[in-house]
Every structure is written in structure tokens, then in C-alpha cells.
Length: 118
Image (cartoon, rainbow, N blue to C red; front, side, top):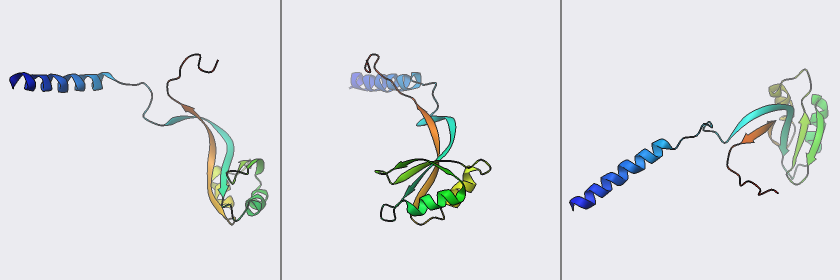
């Protein structure tokens, strides 16, 4: 019985030591924002269609970059004098708009096998 108890204590201490030794220099986030693109992504309800959002886009002074037909969304360049918050508030007034978010480039952290893409 004493041997089993000693083993359990050793296993617990070893496990705790291993957990403490494992660390990463990367922050505890899913990704790091590396660059603002000066554009936004807006999604709309499929049954409403893109017409109200495209009309609002023109009225807000934003420039259409791309229309995602399968995702019911668009990418647009922000108008120069407006901030993202102002542009988002303008676009959210259109019928069927579900969400407006800033477009950003994310750097994901993880491991990859060398030569896998070759």
C-alpha cells in the first residue's frame, strides 16, 4: 500500500513539474492582429439579398472590393474621412445586414510539418 501511495505522489509531482515546464512565448490568443487592411466585411441575410447593402455602401461612400455570393457578404474599402465605427453604423442601417466587422490580417500560431507543402 505504501508503494502505491508513493507512486501516486511521484506521478502527481512529476505531472505538475511537466505542466510547469511547458510554456510558450506566444500570447494566449487564437491569433495576433498584424495589420489593419483599411477595409471591412459585412454579412447580410440571404433572403434579403445584397441590393440594400450595396445601395447603403454607395450612400456611405465605401468602395466595393468583393462580393461573397456563397457567404452572403461583401468586402469594402472604408471611406477615407470615416472611421470604422462610423462606416459600420452607416451600413448597419440597411435592411438585412447581419454584421459588419473590420477586415484584418491574422497571424496564426501553430506547428507545421516541414516539407508538407512541397
